[in-house]
Length: 160
Image 1 (cartoon, rainbow, N blue to C red):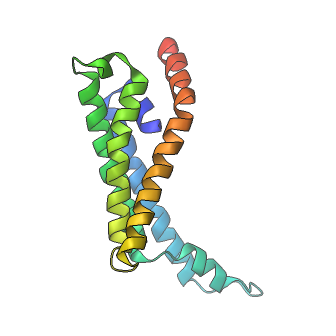
Image 2: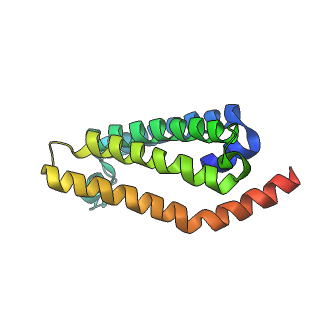
């Protein structure tokens, strides 16, 4: 949603900068988590193993998450701009562009993340069901929040 609002209100260049900044922040967070896990525990702190279990994601999950984030957000923006500049109904409706571009971007996000993180780790049927569930959940949230997204876009576009 934020990507759609950013590209709609501020353009492709700023939106791409926000995507790269988000990617960099996530990458820095990964390094910080690993550094904190590697440091010796504070005396009396008995939960270092639990802390490491929660924040010590497997490299496949981290790489899958970062790759899914970057590829899906860049695709979402590219599709959104193409729809906005087209001669179709998408050019006249922000919410149609937002949902249309997100429908394809969520496929890429779920597909890239699930493939990198879980293909070969989970049985194929479970892998496929998890990927489908991730897509449905992402699009479900997008649909559920689309009236709020449209209201934010309308209010901000009037004030900019």
